Amino acid sequence: MKKITILIPTYNEEEVLPTLMKALEQVTKSLHQYHFEFLFVDDGSSDDTTKLLQQFHIKNSHVEY
Image (cartoon, rainbow, N blue to C red):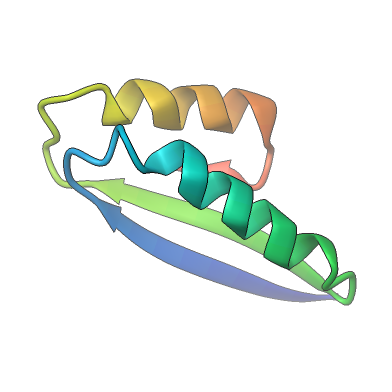
């Protein structure tokens, strides 16, 4: 199975991360021939971006940060 890593830079993205995760999961759900990894890079956010990324990682093994 081919692996696709999607690199996502973040900076104070607390408000939009849940919407982004839903969209990523919907798109990748239909592509069974690939294994996806979502790699988030937080560039020093001062909001709860990192906390949300930690929660996403716990719920979804495809999420790394």
